[in-house]
Length: 300
Image 1 (cartoon, rainbow, N blue to C red):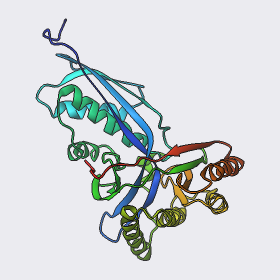
Image 2 (cartoon, rainbow, N blue to C red; image 1 turned 60 degrees about the vertical axis):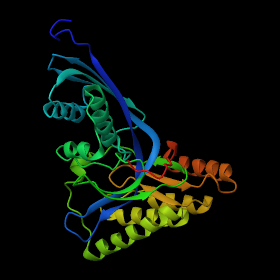
Image 3 (cartoon, one colour; image 1 turned 90 degrees about the vertical axis):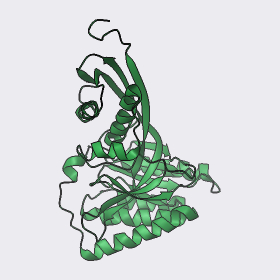
Image 4 (cartoon, rainbow, N blue to C red; image 1 turned 120 degrees about the horizontal axis):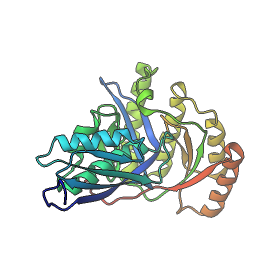
């Protein structure tokens, strides 16, 4: 094999799930207290890295995935035997909508490149790279977590919920997460104290599987976010949720999405789901139904 010293190509593949917006996002009273609470969904970013030992050039497909290419280069700079190769990204997460597509791309990339290099990639190692690139969702952890997305660090593991249905509405357009996080937050000291109380409520509700409380906190968070990135359809979607007997409304706080949370175990779920889809279609046209992920007791 020319230029590779006879060594065989190395390859690795991995995935990372996305999130439907955030169950809660705001700012705590502490310094640098920006945080969010994840809502993992059954949609994934997939990364495949095909490396060639003895070469140095790195490429990415699609070509616009510059952050993933930068991450691959950072990993190569930190290992004893770097290599060039081709990184390919795909999956079912639309960009700029508030579904953590960029974070999922990067986490999947780190895992795939690590697998090719036979380098372990635990969450803290991945975080050490990502905080040099952009604010990040907590998609490194198989759980619902509270996460400091701007400092790229875990706040706490809340646990897991049973699978839920999300009837998602997209208001259109796209949001650049990096640019969004540069916008000064208009939240007052009173707002920060309320966010701390909401986090306490969510932290208690998730392990209890108190879905009504989870939905109530999510709806309040969506409303509080209106001063930062308003959603023109929020109150209409809240009304749909009330009419169909949903749990609450979840928002892509830094994206373009809103979702009605439904409990598949509740009576008449199919009827509620159909009614929510019909009502949301009248509001926005395009509606997508998602399923949230449920995890075991370990957070990894």
